[in-house]
Amino acid sequence: MPLVEVVQSVVTDPGVVARAAAFATDQLGKTVVHAKDRAGFIVNMLLCPYIIDAIRMYESGFASKEDIDAGMVNGANYPMGPLALSDLIGNDTMLSVAESLFEEFREARYAPPPLLKRMVEAGLLGRKTGRGFYDYG
Image (cartoon, rainbow, N blue to C red; front, side):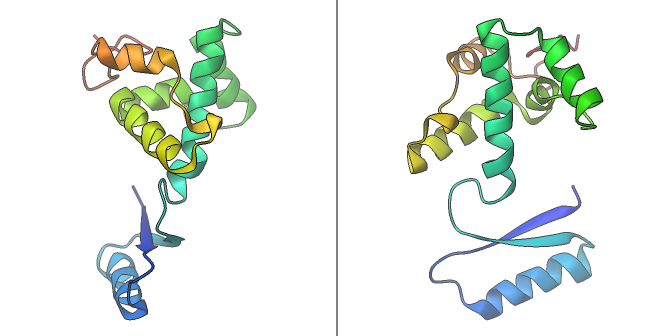
């Protein structure tokens, strides 16, 4: 990934933040964004609710997984749909991120859907196990 999130805690010296950002940019060739220390930082704070909403939509029977993913690929010009993305990230990782966000913020939008929990319990972790929302066998 071309991005590095440089996170500053309440006790991080600004010089350390500057050195970390310079290293990521100059040595690694990454794009750096800065965030405060809280669960999810920038990317997961925005990405996780999007994927959770897609899982809930699929779980409720509102639309098929194929239609949800095709809608976002062809209607929002995303490179992949949210359910395929969850499989790529790993459904266990998505569950862990959702639990972390929910634990910190106690907002329903971060609560992991029951389907995601059941899939992880069943070993349907996505691409790394060959099955998740899709079959990769």
